[in-house]
Length: 115
Length: 117
Image 1 (tube, rainbow over the protein chains, first blue to last red):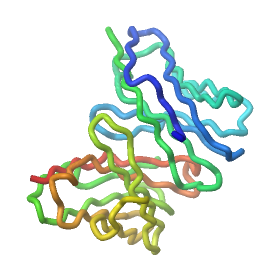
Image 2 (cartoon, chains in turn orange, yellow; image 1 turned 135 degrees about the horizontal axis):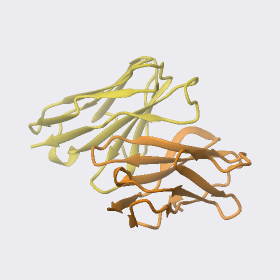
Image 3 (cartoon, rainbow over the protein chains, first blue to last red; image 1 turned 120 degrees about the vertical axis):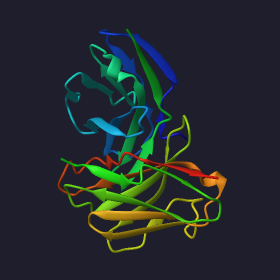
């Protein structure tokens, strides 16, 4: 089974609007971490936000917030007030406690911000 | 903080030659480094994990003799693609993990685009 599923290959959003990128995960490990990375066309992977499985609050970092719904095993990324520079690929990733070093990446979502 | 560099950023080589890619953590000590491969419009595929001073752990299906990994110090890991062929053309990304700087995440290098003619 896929560890990380991103069902939206591509998304469009109008500049200044909010957008939600979906991510669901599959694990039986009670302790895990969830990450979102941004990959612009230059190729570098930029760390955006992290959510631990035991964190009570949803993670937020500036315009990024993670909508963590543990029972549904979803960790959607919300970008508020989209900017043209947000156009990029976005990857959701998970790390399980039992294999601390291994990251599982989703297939990514290509976000296009329209002016 | 937590900057990872890669060199070169792109390389073109002839079939049959070997290519070495360097990955450096610039402002932290990387206890563990990772090498990924990414095909166009696809996700990252973990190739191997390396800890300083020990042999790399390769993922299933990755040829150890083809992709040589050396983690010589706490700030440097190298990936050598030996006897490269056109099918090895890809985007190679390294990442590094520290026990002290953001211990739960990996910090990625900018990637190396390899083209084998």
